[in-house]
Length: 412
Image (cartoon, rainbow, N blue to C red):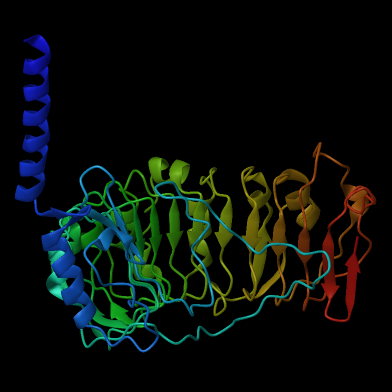
């Protein structure tokens, strides 16, 4: 009797699971409503490279670029990055952020150069389809490198409140950044790199993004956003800020704009290729967690000045780029060797394309770091010279490249 009762109960549970599955619209692990949304999205694209050729059949969770939650069957990730893009974001370990700087190959020369971004997009559309809104559980969306015909960044992104990762880099959008982005309170990564036709007049859209860790707005025009630093310095999770070529000026950096929380949390800061004044360096002085600092061509139009040696006191610094800044000397005792001798974690130091005339004066400095991590020291296209100290030229170091002038290279 008990065994018969157990069999009936087991059969009831099986039938109950089947009914729930049918009511939810699950077909072989894929939500039918979401499968239709993906098919409609596919129809909105021109797809000359056949990137979406696998988007057929019943189980959308098996389609290329689509990831579903294994338990619920909901689509949670859409990775439609153009396959022909000539750079990769693969170092990003979701949801944590990692940082990169020029890797050193002892068999190759290091040079600071600008490589224009070129690629052929996989997918093309006149605008992004609102069918994405049917994917209500989506938390990861990568559309980078595709062609949206310089249409406006859609307002409907603001309704995709589960997004944690949004990558629109080089996707050929245009217009203003939507204020609806303020609704994306779960967002941790926002990559708008290379959107040359996009601009923003305010950063209020970012004011509620308290989970944001990574922000890349390379080449987005931010010149009129006077609240830029006011907003960014109040985002407690922000650790990676990339704003090169954003037409930044001192309107974006009001006096004393950087608070202590911001100073302690930011590890990556790129302000290169803007039009700033050297006074912002005073605010950077307390950013003790900085690992990457790129100020190349930030002060290009400023009068000649000295490189502050307190940069060597940023103990976490791994990469420092001060290329093309019209520097002619060092400020403070010890000069270049003070920076090298105190920033013991430094791997890349690029001071090329300045007007530095000081000698190195190695006799004024003794070895201070237990271990030096320096891999690249570029003093190219300056007017400085003189011998380097023996402790820096330690033959036990297998990879150190030193560029002292355009005609001379020393490599150990």
